[in-house]
Length: 140
Image (cartoon, rainbow, N blue to C red; front, side, top):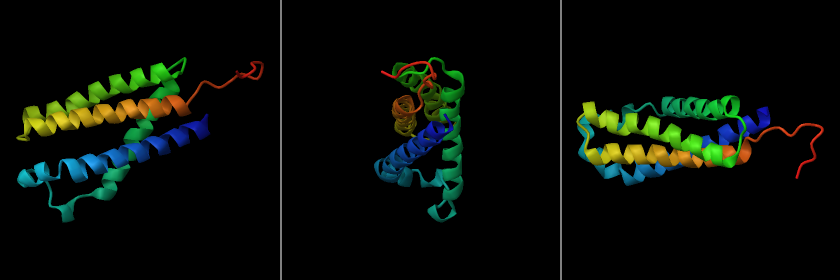
C-alpha cells in the first residue's frame, strides 16, 4: 500500500503542478498583470514554498482517500475528488473574491481549476490506490 500511496502522491503532484503552470502561468497571466498591485513581484514570489505547499496538499488529498475511504474504487475516488474540490475550490476561489478585490472571473477560474484538479486527482488516485487483495482471494 505504501508504494501505491507514493505513486499516487507523485502522479497527483505532477498533474496538479502541470495544470497550475498552464492556468496560472499562461491562461491567467494577463489577469495577474492587470491586478499586479495585489501580488508580490515575480522576483519576490516564493516558488520553492509553493511546491512544498502543493506537495503537502497532495499528500493530504491522497492520504485521506487511502486511510479513510473504504471500500476503494474508481467511482468513490471521483466522488471524493468532486466533494474535496467543491469544498476547497469554493472557499479558495469565491471565498477569496468575497474579501479581496480580485475580479470575479479570477475567483471563478480558481474554483473551476481546483475542482478540475481534484476530479482528475481523484480519478488518478482511484486508478492507483486500490484495496489490497487478500492472500486467499484470486485476482480477477
